Length: 419
Image (cartoon, helix red, strand yellow):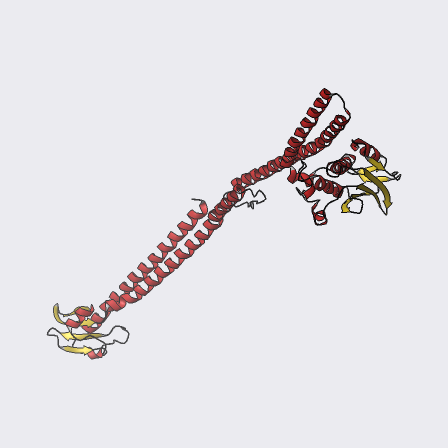
């Protein structure tokens, strides 16, 4: 219990004690004054015995009646005065003997009505009890409010804070207050929350970095593996030695096995593809020729001259896009591929034309969706991610990609932003 509480309690006890002392003093003073008055009435009657009517009784507030020894009434100061001994005893009135020459000659009944006299004291005591009760309730209410503000509410805030942190909401902070009884705990808990939040953020960034690394590596691995597979298949066609063909077939099968494993790995980090790091910069357009030559495993590509210009792209990601498009053409069309370059406003347009059966018109709007594979892909292995990845990478390089059928076959167009 602190000093404030002790002071309030002492003040309350002192106030109640003063009130009770005042009530007792008032009652005793009242009794003392009544005894003096009663004796004066008896003395006045004694002095005027024999001619009681001539006495001076106007100064007395109490009504009285004078009787003989035989209870015969000799004098009545007012109609309110009790005139017989029995009634006086019942009412608690005062009866005093009148003596003359040492002998009792009569008595005076003074209407004091002690029960009525006690009523003012009772009223004062009732008022005192009411005042004390009101004061007690008021102080209790104030003390409860004080406890609620200083103890209960801060405790509930701590409880709510603990629930929020347990549910993973590390942005929920505690309000710090100098007069908060839990101030040091509040500050410590809030510091703990900040440290947990920082640790969680670091963990999130680390996991994101790992996912981006896995997604990037798994996707990048698919390109050279596909090149190995296609090259081995081409060599199998031209090889004459059966043992060489057998070894080349083994290489092709293992390359396909690696491709499937890498695809599974890629699926695990697919949701983070949109955060895959792409860093576009200025590049000379002649880099496109190298990308196309690297992907021309079957020597089926012909292309027009490349306009001399600067393009805005990430070379690594652009190489992935071109390789994806050409390998899809080899897989599903297996025809010659013509590549046409043209400057269109602020873009370098690249048109990839194959001469296969194309894609059904109702499937074209879905080709860039995740996991979507057309009807012509039913007999071919794949994950339905190639064009989805191409679209995401092109968007992050501020370019565009479209596809459509024409009379000759299937067309994919890239629009690379000019630097």
